[in-house]
Length: 234
Length: 223
Image (cartoon, rainbow over all chains, first blue to last red; front, side):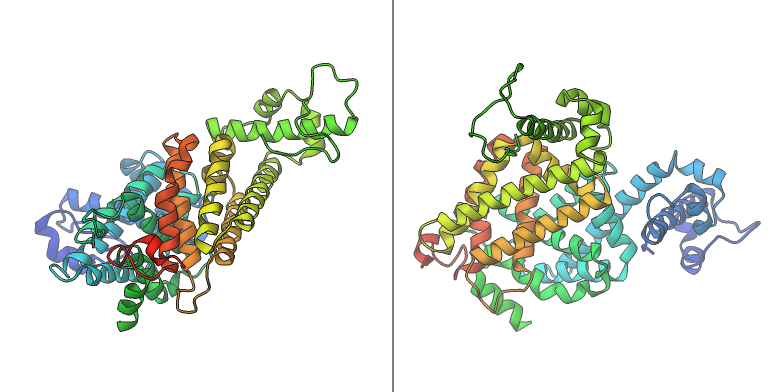
């Protein structure tokens, strides 16, 4: 699922080869205990994320997570106190990986134009969510709508996008930055629209929303005509 | 709190401890309203999950049977309270938009003012509808999304139609406004919701106006 980095450096070659494996080789494989633990934890988190998406929260039991991750129940409890604990860990990693994906997409465009960076960040966001429906559902639907106490994390994740948007953004004619409430409303508006689409089961089509999301995001800063011009210029 | 008054009853009438002169119907409606107020207050205070039927009847000062005579249970009560609040809120916003003088920009301001006013006036309902409803139950999430859809339509009706705007524009605008209000409520500053008016008004109006922060002032662009 998520492209999480493996643990110890010495394991990196082996890690690459087993990245897509369901489980580690049995017996003496020479992998460091840290790597094994890290790999198990990642698999459990992926197992929960997929189970949640496919089965819903109730049916996502510790056994179900363990089965999907090929990790025993007793090993599960070495990593997490409970399903809820695993959920929180999964949520944190999911929003971190989305944030990282968007940040690096924006960074590759530096020192390009602000609007090019916004486009690149939004495209990366929509692309990632469309490719990873379980991740999209976890972060956008489960987080806010399932009331499992990750509101603060959701808010922090959204707030994390605000500086990315503000950096290099056009200022008002008086030379002042656009009010923070405006940045937040833009980020919240995009997140809300995406959440609604994911809830409606349209995750795979999120990529098609790029022109809309981009125009909406640019408009408060550049005005509607300029935003439209940039979006239609492609 | 919720304006659920029986038909034909004078506004401002209050239920008194001794009320032989009050009609059976008035008392029934009044009790129903107290139950709805109670769940709004309690969910605002402690969340939907933690709120029990016993808490609700105690807060409302009604018998358990009265609650079940009126509602199937906690979820139905929650949804009925939510729907009543949304109906009242949308009616106020619509009325405010309809009576606004000027153009679409004044309509947007009037609608937003009515919206924020209502929240400030009803902090418990605001918290229940804007925060708790999102996650209370799957049915509550659906009711919430339906309410969002009604506001999407309200914004669409209040603003000038421009075939070039993104199809999702109202959805993102409503989502953005909800998010800002959501945070205001979470901060415990619901009573000061009207402070958000200038920023939200600017945010909602911008896509319908020519020019942005670097392209002329707001009034200069108004038709």
